Length: 136
Image (cartoon, rainbow, N blue to C red; front, side, top):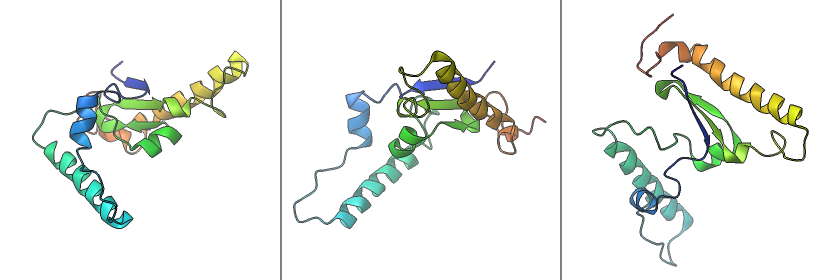
């Protein structure tokens, strides 16, 4: 009853103010090498994560990175949320050209798999509100 399912993409993905704040990284100079740029980006993302410590829990932003989101559904027991990204809703998992029973069966299996993570060795350590509590 308390499980949240986020399907498609995070609500703030197209929020220009949010994206500007998180990825507020000055443009690269032509002389900057890839390693230096990567270091600047990682440092900024680390700053963003540290800034979350004193703030209210963000239940809108998805936990995983864009590359993972495009390729995998996942469960975050601490948020009691499953994520089914839009990129995952393509072949071989889903296609409007496949019969409905194939799409429903495939997506149903994926959703069921993610839900069961709420009852595995990690999920059992979090209650229905995402608080760390062994409720078994």
